[in-house]
Image 1 (cartoon, rainbow, N blue to C red):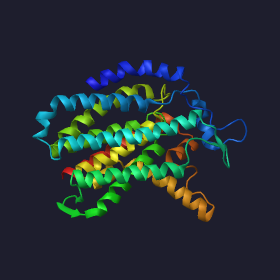
Image 2: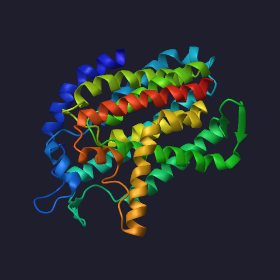
Image 3: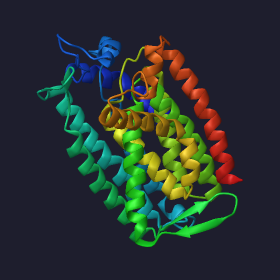
Image 4: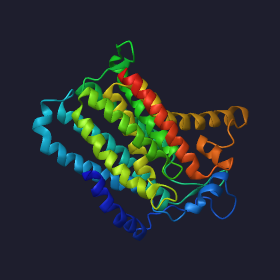
Length: 335
């Protein structure tokens, strides 16, 4: 509730501040040849970008305050070293947020490059991927050496598979994959953050079962912030999340799956993020090797737009699907 109230108070002045700094979405299609994506979404030009910046700042600040107040009580009731867990949560949240903020800055104020269709905005995919993997490996090493995490848990049979040092690249893969998957999903008003809200409630339940109090507190603060943000992000959005939020939120979702040890549950609870990134991957491979499209447009939510589905209809049905997948994921995690 404190997080919800704090973010609710701050978001309207923050929107005005973004307008003042001209930190808004650009007309990415240019004046000439436009892609189908640009034709569908260029009406959103002028909408402030950067909701993720406010959420990352306020959630991190409130988490530090609560952690400091409750540190003595939490130290004696944590499954991981308290300080190390707080550090890894904030490291992931802030580092991927900083990378996304830099990408947002280049998109808005940098010079666009001409692509095959329309323009390319932001830092190159290669540069972004290298930095993501460097951060992912750093976080994976922190999990392995400081939190002694080196295993995955198989549902139902209660079997734990130790991965040893291989856990570090595995953790990096999970974090980078979900960071990119979230970023790709963040294409319709309210879609990605609504699905994230469902996922966080699910993992809050899992963290409670694990008695992971630092993670429970962080999830609760983040949930409050997301509810406040979604009020202004649902169609038609008054503020967009931006890459600062998208990259950080996806990376954190992957980290939460690793901290709880419920990777198989994460596959279902975050299932629509996986579907979205998989549809884009399939489309790219098919175009590269066979010069054919598998989907009318990728990621998958854009195909539904081309079919004529209104944006809110796609988002609401995605949320309902996310609820069903989350229930199944909880069953795997707690069954």
